[in-house]
Amino acid sequence: MSLIIFMRHGQAYNNVKRLLVGRNLESHLTELGREQVKQSSELLKTIPIHKIYSSPVIRTVETAEIASATLGLDYELDERLFEIELGKLVGLYYDDVLSAHGDLFAKFYSDNDDENSLLEFEVESFGSVRERIRNLLQEFVGKHVDENILLISHLDPIKAAISLAMNIKPSSVYSVQVPNASINVLKNYQDNLTLCGLNILNMGRFLTEF
Image (cartoon, rainbow, N blue to C red):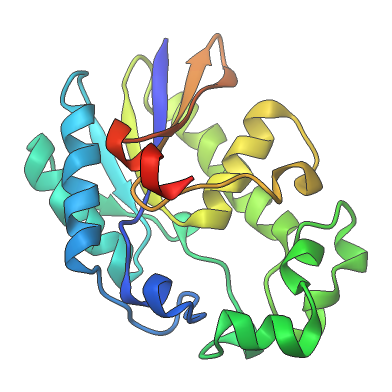
């Protein structure tokens, strides 16, 4: 039995500014974001972690560096943990997109990729995100037998992992919150993944962030 643990990157400046940066524009962690990651990494010291993997985006790499130092482990980059490709939305403010186009991001979680209206903006579909996360999980279940691994990623890849573990439609995870530096835990038992921990945080954060 082993755990596959997803951690979202800590708060970055694009989160504060509500700026859509995707995987292409750099956005570093804020001081608060770095503290969030330290707190979450400390929670993980209570169990053995055997390997850390991270998305190559700067805010996840900075998160991985903090987790790596806290846990005493090296980390490895894996592009399957990438943020989604935001295409023509890169560099736009979230609220401006809502004002101009309505809630596009609800449509991003369409249960039918053919009806995903974000394709005209050259945004990667949620179905594509699910497939790369599915591929990653299938590989790591076989590669890390009886080992606990930490995967540092972004909002939508983590939602994809949750939807796969729970065997639910994309639309079902639209309203699921995944706070910065939160921990989500999948348990592998006899090659079946189940969600056993959702949005684990320092308890004080629940008072102010939900």
